[in-house]
Length: 111
Length: 115
Image (cartoon, rainbow over all chains, first blue to last red; front, side):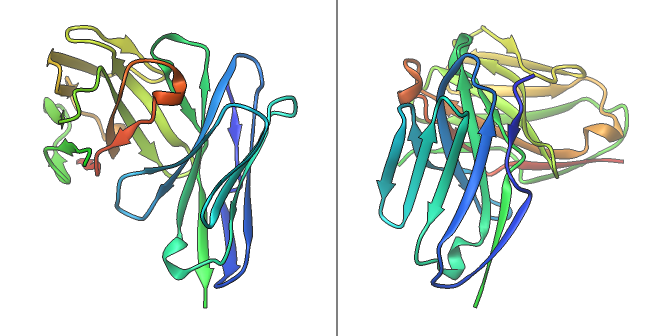
């Protein structure tokens, strides 16, 4: 199978920095997405990486290393509203550009 | 603003019933997807469609079927609901093309309970 692994839960403090890791099988890799999902809501797109390196978007950054099958999502200056699940999803070479999702990381931000 | 609408937020059905979950998108997207989301298992793809009347099986199609008669509408059908189909169902759509353009936009989900 095409396993996508990420931690189940993380806790961090308001104002701090947190890094959420994601590892995947490299065979057929075609791009990696990060989504945010607040409880009871739809997942929303955060970032996309296809080349190695860091993509920065305000307080959120996403990093990719294709050779290592590794990505992370970095959240800076954490706010209470960042408490959510963060989903790593990988696109593999297949019909329809289907995505395979990890189990999601539930992040709790504490005051 | 992009919009994917699922017809119901909550549904309660009985074992053996035929269940229809409806999804409509207003972005003229070619691709549409149905996932189920269960704690610890993440999103798992049930079926997807890349064009009207076209469908492809995902990772867990057993017990489900789909219908895409119009570009904007993708229906998920549980022919005979069972208790192990109790789950959150999410619909998504995306544009055809390279993966970079393939951002999937999700509906708010339908929480289905089968009793």
